[in-house]
Image 1 (cartoon, rainbow, N blue to C red):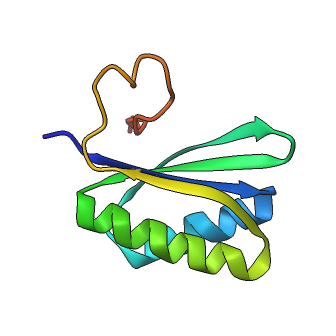
Image 2: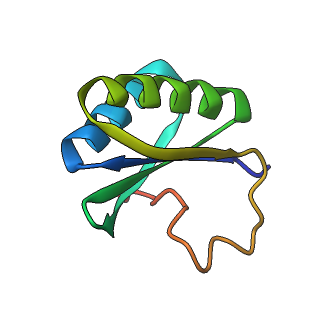
Image 3: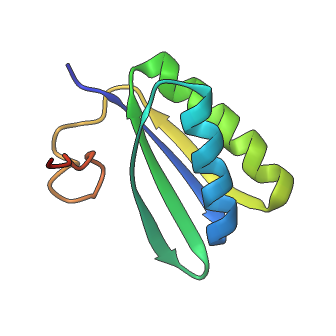
Length: 96
């Protein structure tokens, strides 16, 4: 089953950390890599079921907005499998 994709774009690393922290605390989502976009923008990637990603993005945006600027956010309930080869949106598997 394809997991939903959530992206939060912030201005600044601290704001991105605030968004990521609030997101993973608010819902059962997996946090992907953070992406330095340029111009001070940082994106965080969230994966999980649609309801969890929606709750996580909402919590992350609300929390990050209190300390900095959120440039944008989106939720893709069923992202195309054609995105993964071109964009770093998959969760990295950790080896033990």
